[in-house]
Length: 72
Picture 1 (cartoon, rainbow, N blue to C red):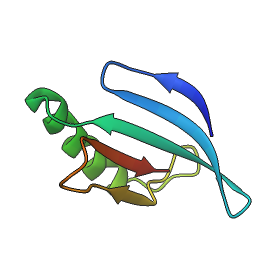
Picture 2 (cartoon, rainbow, N blue to C red):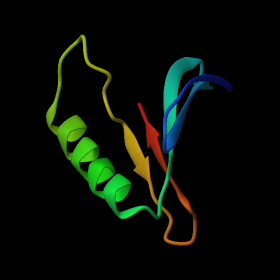
Picture 3 (cartoon, rainbow, N blue to C red):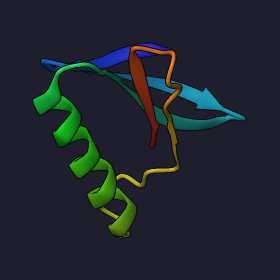
Picture 4 (cartoon, one colour):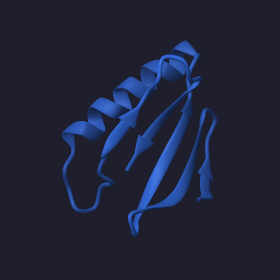
């Protein structure tokens, strides 16, 4: 994995999944405003299907972890 971008509450990594290049966005939970924005982002990505927009494949959200993982 290598880091390709960083924001206020997340980091995006490029990784390989069975020889397929994926992006994994790691979002830190705990700030109310950021959590609301994350929920909105997930809902939007679930609805969007277009060749020029990254597709959301999986959301990994363990109640014990301080992070949410978006696999795109």
